[in-house]
Amino acid sequence: MKKYIISIVVIALLFGCEDFLEEEVYTEYDPSVFLQDEAGVDALLTGAYSAAIYSNFQAIDHFNVQQLNTDETWETGGGLNRRVLPLIEFTWDASTDYFNNGYNRFYNAIAAANNVLSVIDGLDNLEEATLKKIEAEARFLRAFFYYNLHSYFGPTPIVTVPDGATLDEIEAVGKETPRATEEEYRSYVEGDLLYASENLSYGGLSSRANKGNALGLLAKFHLNNKEWEKASETAQEVISNGGYVLYDDYTKLFAVDGEDNNEYLFRFEAAVGTNQANVYIPHAFPPNYPIQSNWENFGAQFRTYTLFYETFEEVDIRRQLMISEYTPTTTGVITLLSRDADGNVLDDVRSLKFVPDPNAAGRFSGNDSPIIRLADIILARAEALNEVSGPTQESIDLINEIRNRASVDEVVLTDFSSKEELRNFILAERGRELYSEGLRREDLIRHNKFIERALERGKSAQPHQVVYPLPQPQIDNNPNLEQNPYY
Image (cartoon, rainbow, N blue to C red; front, side, top):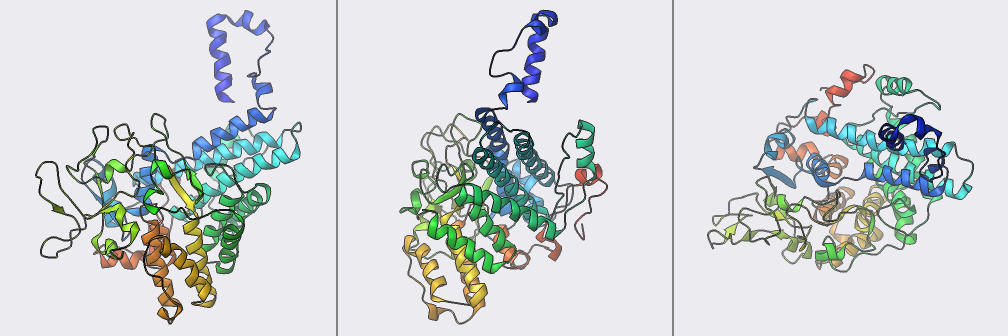
């Protein structure tokens, strides 16, 4: 709305206010008309999606926060290392810039979704079904970003703006709202996701809200809250009725030519030449790796731990997207990345899961980013079933769906004598299936392994570091914000 008001002011200044103000406005872009029809509201909703997308280096920021302090990935080199070192070494504090950047980005997306909801609340000229669909999409986006905020910080303020509030009143709300309780957070997000799932249909673009990704996010929400029965039931709804299927070829699932698939429930689209591009790949190439002339290789490099790499069987197709050795263009001599010739750990394996885009433009590639996919939901149900009943044939069958695609041997029920044994196996299988997708931190936290694995790597991790500190600028701005314990 502000964009159109600014445009009117500029035109008035260029052509003279008096004549301009005497003219009648016939165009559909009149702001008093623009938001009164479905096309106008959909344009506003598209703006909310734009605010929601992790693109370019925003996506890398999120990846860094969710991956670089796990047992899977770390980083060295380039200007990036100075910024990420506190994440890797568990020395972060409330001034670490990643936290304030994420906090602002997530709340900007929430504000955009709330703006859509505020506009449609005043409309009475659209069909009820249309209004419900728009509301459902906006509420899905809002829930998604409260989910992300909680993953970072635990419960944060649930911001609601009164109808007809002035700009000063809106600003005051942001400066005065205290943190929600855990119960308030769960009720709010669950309510949004239930509304979205009840008022949207399966199918359509996986880059927009639909019934499948609303239920998929709800299943993950229940899983991370350890609401096992709800997680199991919601995951089964997606598996049985969503029409999703595992993509045949795992090695192409994350390539540009494989992104039009029916395994992704929710994804962020990327395209070269737009402001929504994937910039992961230049961080993954090892030094002097033989690349195409239109690709770029950064000094800041994402590395995979050897012990994580060795959880894969040699025949595992998923391991084909990792580089454990290569021949640099400068030496012509094979360089080892997993272990040296004496068997010493190098922790330098590279994940090229997002297969380099042949038509990339330097650092910018067109690989879409999966946010939720069917394999994640299948393993979520297997995990939830195990937590409810211990090892069962159904949970084993679900795991084997994933392993069969990877061409590794099936597991059998008798392999697991306890709930804990199967729980540990599922965590390892999630790592093998979902590596480089920004999910490892939340999986380790749910399994109570995040701090334990960090200590094993020699980090001075503390129990309270399962959540990040609220950013200091936000606490300075809002005296009612209470910092997380021990920060």
